Length: 582
Ligand code: SAT
Ligand code: MN
Image 1 (cartoon, rainbow, N blue to C red):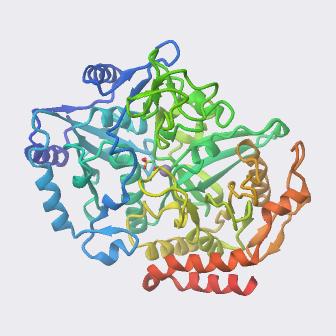
Image 2: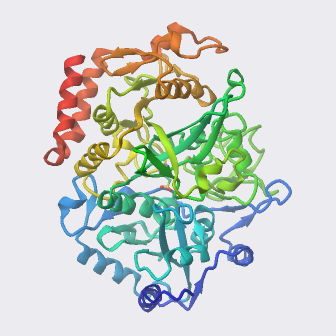
Image 3: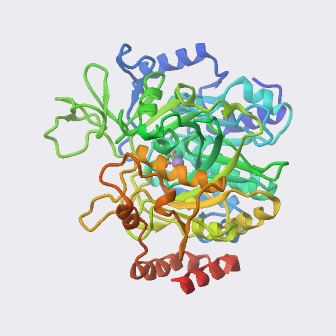
């Protein structure tokens, strides 16, 4: 128990509300981990995997009605609706507190309330933040232990300050009709009830590190973004860092852990983070980023030794698998894993599955929770309190048409426009239809804790505080041809795009001016060693189809119309300039 009286009196208040039988203060120790894992196995929450194949690993099944983030149950509770803005669900704090307290009252009877102190970010960083999550889910405790720096270190960082994030999570009966994930940015508070899954309940992740942090960032002059951070090391030892935003389940983890193809002998990619970046202008006028997390909550399906060897190495031990398939001999499996499917296993719902089954064995949003320290390519800078200097910001989406493989913004305002108009096909990471294009500005639509118009304004303002702002790029690995075939091989080959981006940042290569931005010339883009991909294919994947772009601009307007009264004029002007160029 910490000496901080703000913490102890708040915990006391929540205990009186939820009425658990016991209160357990987590210390984050190895010993405690072992005890809690044993308890979770006893209670049937976790199944230990085969220790010779998967040392320290466990399997978990969530309730089948509870397998993804639920945006319709996610609320920003600010004094006025305007502060939350038209793209967020809003409730007035007083009514939200009333509803949630009524649900939570006595909600932990017969259960244990775990107090999880956690630190987001490296110790000693001015950007790092402390949170305390109270939960009655052992699964949440064990996941938070991987995803954050949990335990005594958080109390040390907090000292006697009171500016910690207050998080309360109650499972209740996991009824979708009584599921709420509510954020109170003005109180630095999160209350989540009725769910046990991922981003709904690991409150340090999307709730604190994005929704609450984006609010704090605007107030305090920094950015909380849905971005991976990676370092590119050249054979000469030059290290360049980039941050890239992609919507959930669009390959951020794969990109952050990419292994360059043979052609790029001597090049290395170092992972700083795979999902979230907190960024602030540094004293030298550059933008600096930290990864607030301590682990990876990655999508399992499609992860294999070819698509992401570093991820396979990372999840080989001390990992929790959620909603994957499970075999009788303690092995896990998912669609797109190496090797043939098991002759028989239990699917993500726990039902018997064989390769003849029509349903998928693993849920498409099944996940692994793995410590980042298992990653063979973890950047040493991940512990650096001042963060890493960012040379390029990349915005990417999943688009079958229209968007070229890569282009560079003309300047910061144009780059903000590229981010603001990002669109992507929906994935299984959130409940709802999959595969429809929706506008997802900066991949932050589900995660921005305030008015999206104000968010664009904050991005524009930040430019004035940087002498050397990062260059901004747009990428799309997912463009398809007429037959539905991918026009770009993706995965490790994305190194070629990254190389062009890095070379642009260092002023080493040229580009063609196009209506959309700067586009790579074939002589500046490394095509060597690619089979079946030459200058003609590059031209095809970079092609600008004016008809498609007419539709695109109109479709972009849908979001702009929704937030029109808050939209910075710069965005309208950028739109006009784009139309004129087209
Ligand atoms: O479930 S999470 O929100 O943590 C994962 C994601 O959607 O990116
Ligand atoms: Mn994410």
